[in-house]
Length: 177
Image (cartoon, rainbow, N blue to C red; front, side, top):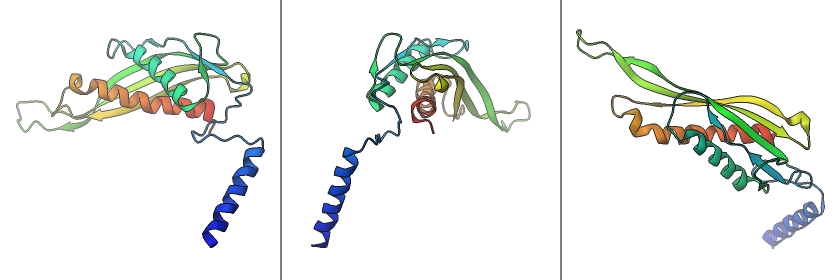
C-alpha cells in the first residue's frame, strides 16, 4: 500500500511539472526552443599545419552530429540561430617523460608523447548576442612511442580529443555552466 502512495505522489508531481513552463533537458541544455530552432556549422579549417588530411572535415561533421543528437535544433546550411565557425589552430606532439636507453652510447628517448589539439571557435547566438563568443578549446592525449607509432594511434587519439573538445564547446554554448 505504501508503494502505491509513493507512485501516486510521483505521478502528481510529474503532472504538475508538465503543466508548468519549466523546461529541462536531460542533456543539460537551457535552450529556449521557442526562440532558437536552428544551428549551422561552417566548415572548420586546419590552420595548424599538422594532423591527418581530413581532420577538419572530421571535426566539422562530429560537431554537427553531437548537436543533432543532444538538442532538438535543426541543422541548416547557413544563418542558423546558433552559428559555429573556426579553425584547428594547434596540432602538436611533445615528449612528456624521458626514458633511459640503457646504453651510454645511445641518447635517452621519450617514454610518453603527448598529442595536443586546440580549436578556435567563433560562436554566434543570433537570438541573444550577449552569449556570442570567440574562444579556444584544447585537449591532449598521451601515447607510448616505445610500443606503438603515431600512425597506429593517431586516428583514435584525434577522435578522443575531438570528443572532449566538442563536449566542452557544447557546455560553453548551450549548457551555459
